[in-house]
Image 1 (cartoon, one colour):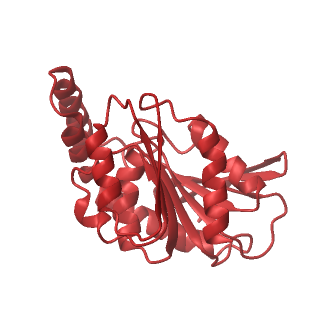
Image 2 (cartoon, one colour):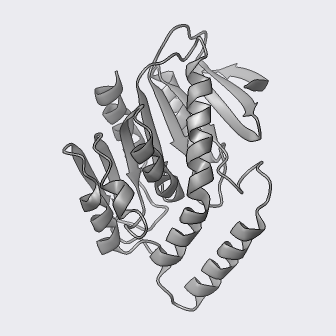
Image 3 (cartoon, one colour):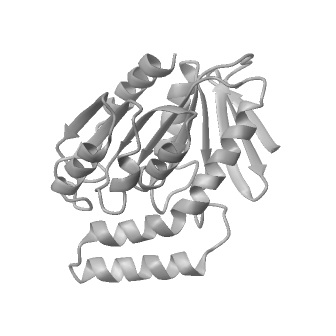
Length: 242
Protein backbone atom coordinates (compact mmCIF):
# COMPACT_ATOMS: atom_id res chain seq x y z
CA UNK A 1 0.00 0.00 0.00
CA UNK A 2 1.43 3.37 -1.05
CA UNK A 3 0.01 6.62 0.35
CA UNK A 4 0.04 9.51 -2.12
CA UNK A 5 -1.36 12.41 -0.07
CA UNK A 6 -2.58 13.28 3.40
CA UNK A 7 -4.67 16.15 4.79
CA UNK A 8 -6.41 16.76 8.11
CA UNK A 9 -9.38 18.98 8.97
CA UNK A 10 -12.12 19.07 11.58
CA UNK A 11 -10.51 16.21 13.50
CA UNK A 12 -10.40 13.80 10.54
CA UNK A 13 -7.34 12.69 8.54
CA UNK A 14 -7.83 11.79 4.87
CA UNK A 15 -5.16 9.70 3.10
CA UNK A 16 -5.25 8.76 -0.57
CA UNK A 17 -3.48 5.52 -1.51
CA UNK A 18 -2.93 2.93 -4.17
CA UNK A 19 -2.73 -0.81 -3.62
CA UNK A 20 -1.42 -2.28 -6.83
CA UNK A 21 -3.86 -0.87 -9.39
CA UNK A 22 -6.58 -0.15 -6.81
CA UNK A 23 -7.02 3.56 -5.93
CA UNK A 24 -8.55 4.33 -2.56
CA UNK A 25 -8.88 6.74 0.33
CA UNK A 26 -8.74 6.16 4.08
CA UNK A 27 -10.36 8.38 6.70
CA UNK A 28 -9.40 8.10 10.38
CA UNK A 29 -9.71 10.28 13.46
CA UNK A 30 -6.83 12.75 13.51
CA UNK A 31 -3.80 11.33 15.37
CA UNK A 32 -5.53 7.94 15.64
CA UNK A 33 -3.50 5.22 17.35
CA UNK A 34 -4.53 1.61 17.96
CA UNK A 35 -7.20 -0.71 16.65
CA UNK A 36 -10.70 0.58 15.92
CA UNK A 37 -13.79 -0.52 13.99
CA UNK A 38 -13.42 -0.20 10.22
CA UNK A 39 -16.18 0.53 7.71
CA UNK A 40 -15.82 -0.36 4.02
CA UNK A 41 -17.73 2.20 1.97
CA UNK A 42 -18.99 1.21 -1.49
CA UNK A 43 -20.12 3.87 -3.97
CA UNK A 44 -23.01 3.89 -6.44
CA UNK A 45 -22.92 3.21 -10.16
CA UNK A 46 -21.23 5.91 -12.24
CA UNK A 47 -19.71 7.42 -9.07
CA UNK A 48 -16.30 7.07 -7.40
CA UNK A 49 -14.60 6.84 -4.03
CA UNK A 50 -14.88 10.58 -3.28
CA UNK A 51 -18.42 11.20 -4.48
CA UNK A 52 -19.97 13.85 -2.17
CA UNK A 53 -22.27 11.38 -0.42
CA UNK A 54 -19.35 9.06 0.26
CA UNK A 55 -17.18 11.81 1.70
CA UNK A 56 -19.97 13.14 3.93
CA UNK A 57 -20.70 9.70 5.33
CA UNK A 58 -17.01 8.82 5.73
CA UNK A 59 -16.16 11.99 7.62
CA UNK A 60 -19.20 11.52 9.87
CA UNK A 61 -18.08 7.99 10.76
CA UNK A 62 -14.42 8.97 11.24
CA UNK A 63 -15.35 11.88 13.52
CA UNK A 64 -17.14 9.30 15.70
CA UNK A 65 -13.95 7.20 16.01
CA UNK A 66 -14.24 4.75 13.11
CA UNK A 67 -11.75 4.14 10.33
CA UNK A 68 -13.37 4.29 6.88
CA UNK A 69 -11.99 3.16 3.54
CA UNK A 70 -13.40 3.60 0.04
CA UNK A 71 -12.05 2.41 -3.31
CA UNK A 72 -12.99 3.00 -6.92
CA UNK A 73 -15.00 0.05 -8.19
CA UNK A 74 -13.72 -1.63 -11.37
CA UNK A 75 -14.25 0.62 -14.44
CA UNK A 76 -15.07 3.62 -12.19
CA UNK A 77 -13.20 6.70 -11.01
CA UNK A 78 -9.46 6.40 -11.58
CA UNK A 79 -9.65 2.76 -12.67
CA UNK A 80 -8.85 1.77 -16.29
CA UNK A 81 -11.75 1.78 -18.72
CA UNK A 82 -13.40 -1.56 -19.46
CA UNK A 83 -14.81 -2.04 -22.96
CA UNK A 84 -17.03 -4.88 -21.78
CA UNK A 85 -18.44 -2.71 -19.02
CA UNK A 86 -19.00 0.22 -21.40
CA UNK A 87 -20.91 -2.09 -23.75
CA UNK A 88 -23.08 -3.39 -20.89
CA UNK A 89 -23.85 0.16 -19.74
CA UNK A 90 -24.82 1.21 -23.27
CA UNK A 91 -27.10 -1.82 -23.59
CA UNK A 92 -28.57 -1.11 -20.17
CA UNK A 93 -29.38 2.50 -21.04
CA UNK A 94 -30.90 1.49 -24.37
CA UNK A 95 -32.99 -1.18 -22.68
CA UNK A 96 -34.25 1.22 -20.03
CA UNK A 97 -35.14 3.78 -22.71
CA UNK A 98 -37.14 1.02 -24.43
CA UNK A 99 -39.04 0.26 -21.23
CA UNK A 100 -37.28 -2.97 -20.27
CA UNK A 101 -37.04 -4.10 -16.64
CA UNK A 102 -34.25 -1.94 -15.13
CA UNK A 103 -33.60 -4.43 -12.33
CA UNK A 104 -32.52 -7.21 -14.68
CA UNK A 105 -30.34 -4.83 -16.69
CA UNK A 106 -28.61 -3.47 -13.59
CA UNK A 107 -28.07 -7.00 -12.27
CA UNK A 108 -26.14 -7.86 -15.42
CA UNK A 109 -23.85 -4.88 -14.93
CA UNK A 110 -23.19 -5.77 -11.30
CA UNK A 111 -22.48 -9.40 -12.18
CA UNK A 112 -19.83 -8.25 -14.65
CA UNK A 113 -18.01 -6.29 -11.92
CA UNK A 114 -18.56 -8.41 -8.83
CA UNK A 115 -15.73 -10.94 -9.11
CA UNK A 116 -13.04 -8.27 -9.42
CA UNK A 117 -14.69 -6.03 -6.85
CA UNK A 118 -14.76 -8.77 -4.18
CA UNK A 119 -11.08 -9.57 -4.72
CA UNK A 120 -10.18 -5.85 -4.59
CA UNK A 121 -12.05 -5.29 -1.33
CA UNK A 122 -10.50 -8.33 0.34
CA UNK A 123 -6.99 -7.19 -0.61
CA UNK A 124 -7.65 -3.65 0.63
CA UNK A 125 -9.20 -4.90 3.87
CA UNK A 126 -6.11 -7.01 4.61
CA UNK A 127 -3.75 -4.12 3.85
CA UNK A 128 -5.67 -1.51 5.84
CA UNK A 129 -5.95 -3.72 8.92
CA UNK A 130 -2.15 -3.90 9.03
CA UNK A 131 -1.96 -0.13 9.66
CA UNK A 132 -1.28 0.98 13.22
CA UNK A 133 -4.15 3.50 13.18
CA UNK A 134 -6.69 0.87 12.08
CA UNK A 135 -5.68 -2.59 13.29
CA UNK A 136 -7.67 -5.81 13.19
CA UNK A 137 -10.86 -4.51 14.77
CA UNK A 138 -14.43 -5.39 13.75
CA UNK A 139 -15.46 -4.57 10.17
CA UNK A 140 -18.68 -3.23 8.67
CA UNK A 141 -19.78 -2.58 5.10
CA UNK A 142 -21.97 0.25 3.79
CA UNK A 143 -23.18 0.43 0.19
CA UNK A 144 -26.31 1.56 -1.65
CA UNK A 145 -27.43 0.75 -5.20
CA UNK A 146 -24.31 -0.57 -6.99
CA UNK A 147 -22.55 -0.46 -3.63
CA UNK A 148 -25.17 -2.96 -2.47
CA UNK A 149 -24.92 -5.05 -5.64
CA UNK A 150 -21.17 -5.48 -5.19
CA UNK A 151 -21.34 -5.57 -1.41
CA UNK A 152 -23.66 -8.55 -1.06
CA UNK A 153 -21.26 -10.97 -2.81
CA UNK A 154 -18.43 -9.51 -0.71
CA UNK A 155 -20.25 -9.93 2.61
CA UNK A 156 -21.26 -13.47 1.64
CA UNK A 157 -17.60 -14.34 0.96
CA UNK A 158 -15.83 -12.36 3.70
CA UNK A 159 -16.16 -13.55 7.33
CA UNK A 160 -14.39 -10.47 8.71
CA UNK A 161 -17.46 -8.32 7.95
CA UNK A 162 -19.77 -8.32 10.98
CA UNK A 163 -22.52 -5.83 10.07
CA UNK A 164 -23.81 -4.06 6.95
CA UNK A 165 -25.94 -1.15 5.79
CA UNK A 166 -27.35 -1.94 2.34
CA UNK A 167 -30.23 -1.02 0.06
CA UNK A 168 -31.63 0.71 -3.03
CA UNK A 169 -31.46 -2.49 -5.04
CA UNK A 170 -33.61 -5.46 -6.04
CA UNK A 171 -33.15 -9.18 -5.65
CA UNK A 172 -32.24 -10.04 -9.27
CA UNK A 173 -28.97 -11.96 -9.39
CA UNK A 174 -28.41 -11.66 -5.63
CA UNK A 175 -30.74 -14.17 -3.96
CA UNK A 176 -28.12 -16.91 -3.55
CA UNK A 177 -25.50 -14.64 -1.99
CA UNK A 178 -28.11 -12.85 0.15
CA UNK A 179 -29.14 -16.21 1.60
CA UNK A 180 -25.56 -16.65 2.88
CA UNK A 181 -25.56 -13.37 4.80
CA UNK A 182 -26.27 -13.81 8.52
CA UNK A 183 -24.71 -10.64 9.97
CA UNK A 184 -26.94 -7.80 11.21
CA UNK A 185 -28.24 -5.67 8.31
CA UNK A 186 -29.93 -2.30 8.07
CA UNK A 187 -31.66 -2.10 4.67
CA UNK A 188 -32.83 1.10 2.96
CA UNK A 189 -35.68 1.18 0.46
CA UNK A 190 -37.11 4.20 -1.36
CA UNK A 191 -40.85 3.66 -1.71
CA UNK A 192 -41.12 5.50 -5.06
CA UNK A 193 -37.80 4.31 -6.52
CA UNK A 194 -37.88 4.64 -10.32
CA UNK A 195 -34.85 2.35 -10.68
CA UNK A 196 -35.83 -0.47 -8.33
CA UNK A 197 -39.30 -2.00 -8.24
CA UNK A 198 -40.67 -1.98 -4.71
CA UNK A 199 -41.45 -5.69 -4.71
CA UNK A 200 -37.91 -6.49 -5.86
CA UNK A 201 -36.37 -4.40 -3.08
CA UNK A 202 -38.59 -6.07 -0.51
CA UNK A 203 -37.66 -9.46 -1.96
CA UNK A 204 -33.96 -8.71 -1.49
CA UNK A 205 -34.57 -7.74 2.13
CA UNK A 206 -36.53 -10.96 2.60
CA UNK A 207 -33.74 -13.04 0.99
CA UNK A 208 -31.15 -11.88 3.55
CA UNK A 209 -30.71 -14.71 6.05
CA UNK A 210 -29.83 -12.47 9.00
CA UNK A 211 -31.93 -12.91 12.12
CA UNK A 212 -31.17 -9.26 12.93
CA UNK A 213 -32.25 -7.12 9.99
CA UNK A 214 -34.20 -3.87 9.88
CA UNK A 215 -36.02 -2.29 6.92
CA UNK A 216 -35.98 1.50 6.61
CA UNK A 217 -38.54 2.55 3.96
CA UNK A 218 -38.83 6.22 3.04
CA UNK A 219 -40.94 8.04 0.44
CA UNK A 220 -39.14 9.39 -2.60
CA UNK A 221 -37.16 8.34 -5.62
CA UNK A 222 -33.83 6.52 -5.92
CA UNK A 223 -31.65 9.48 -4.93
CA UNK A 224 -33.94 10.91 -2.26
CA UNK A 225 -32.64 9.05 0.80
CA UNK A 226 -33.23 11.32 3.82
CA UNK A 227 -30.11 12.76 5.43
CA UNK A 228 -31.09 11.36 8.83
CA UNK A 229 -30.37 7.86 7.52
CA UNK A 230 -26.67 8.72 7.74
CA UNK A 231 -27.04 9.29 11.49
CA UNK A 232 -29.11 6.12 11.84
CA UNK A 233 -26.43 4.09 10.08
CA UNK A 234 -23.81 5.45 12.50
CA UNK A 235 -25.99 4.36 15.42
CA UNK A 236 -26.33 0.92 13.81
CA UNK A 237 -22.56 0.49 13.32
CA UNK A 238 -21.83 1.78 16.81
CA UNK A 239 -24.20 -0.81 18.25
CA UNK A 240 -22.81 -3.75 16.28
CA UNK A 241 -19.10 -2.92 15.91
CA UNK A 242 -18.09 -0.99 19.04
